[in-house]
Length: 183
Figure 1 (cartoon, rainbow, N blue to C red):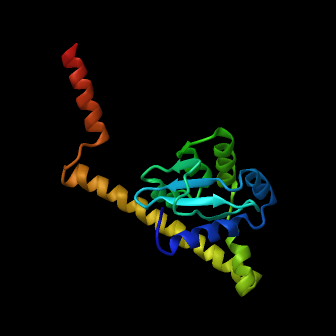
Figure 2 (figure 1 turned 90 degrees about the vertical axis):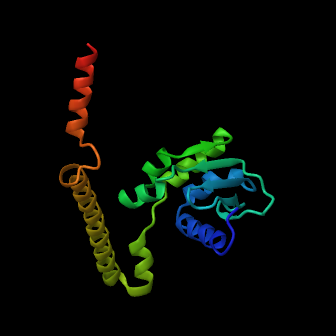
């Protein structure tokens, strides 16, 4: 189980997302008292217990997980690269445990959405929240494009300028030549 302040923050954030979603609470309530383990390498595992209200709380130290959700090692990077697409993230997750609980958890986690603009509006007003959200999206898009350009430039450099890796065309040509030689 994860130690430190994070176990208290993560359930609170998850419960905030669940706050306006009656369908999610209804889907989780039948599993009250059961523990879920979230594994997202390289982060330590996080154990959460489903509450009677259909929310989450940090699990007790000795609680055994009924369901384990394991995300691939690159999940955090992919989540940042795909506009926070939780459906795609959950599709790549490995879920282990009773089918009914695993299905309900998967459904809830796939369909939760954070309404950032609404949360900001409570602090700064509707117009400012709308503008800040739009600015934030532009900034994220700019960072994503910057990372993509950097990766493309690195690939070009290491395949064309300083051939340290084999380019796709060269690998395909080599493969054809090996196949022809084998024939």
